[in-house]
Image (tube, rainbow, N blue to C red; front, side, top):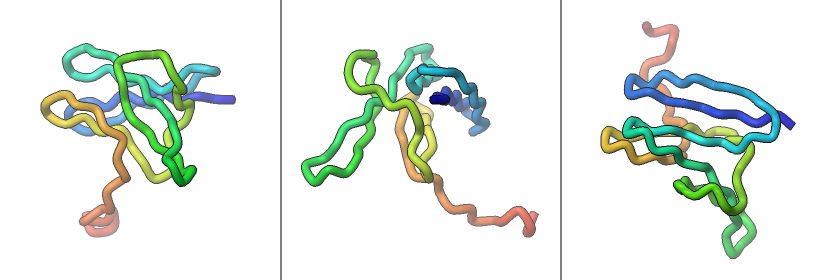
Length: 91
């Protein structure tokens, strides 16, 4: 199994590192490390959240259609990839 570590800087560039059996972590602009946790809702759907604690059920992959996002206050979120307003052909 291959796990992914993604770091996002303030300009929005993502750096992806792949390694074996490593949970997804993110170090924010303030130097704090966050771990992506996975759980389930009452209806059985998967849910994800970030925590500074490494205990618990850690996610090993980012769900399809989602990305890591860090706002200017250094809060880390897992969000849906926003649709492009300007396509690559229009540039």
